[in-house]
Image 1 (tube, rainbow, N blue to C red):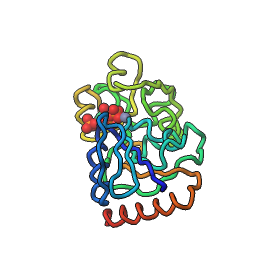
Image 2 (tube, rainbow, N blue to C red):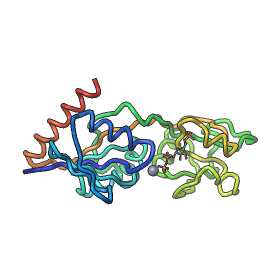
Image 3 (cartoon, rainbow, N blue to C red):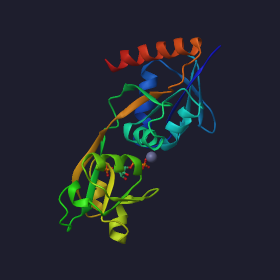
Length: 216
Ligand code: PRP
Ligand code: ZN
């Protein structure tokens, strides 16, 4: 009997709402001790609890058929892969709203994306930021960081940052001001671009019908 695997964020902004969505679809899980793999009890869909940034590559690598992740994270990976077909958005979800914004130190006189031509922009989303700046005719030096982007201007390693903003608390705490929104993001359900065996496809269609019911 076929089963599907869905990767969701283990802990963070999307985890509770991702779990709630699947539970509202009537899925029940037996939680394993290490909590990384939850076995689906009544419906053959299992959960993998992982870092959100790992989800796109897990889908593309065939570790799971589905994943719930922010559009920003998925787009970063797709751009980095030159628009590979390994990942396709199936349903936009109604949670995880945030924006990828440019921010500069409070005292900076840079006013918009245009002011960043030739300047250094620190981000954990290098491909997405480069592409969104290019759309605006701006060519910046992208400083790729693994995290703690908001301290880069203070350390003198960047003139600006491109980072996710939700409440704005992180920017304020670091004396940064938002100068332009580059991209509005929400969470979405992604699937693999590979065609699935018929049994799995049927299962996916049943799951999507339940998700559509919950989203209504
Ligand atoms: C983002 C971003 C900031 C924070 C902004 O991190 O990198 O740290 O959220 O939120 P605020 O405007 O409400 O202060 P995220 O939650 O994506 O965590 P992650 O980088 O660990 O995935
Ligand atoms: Zn993350």
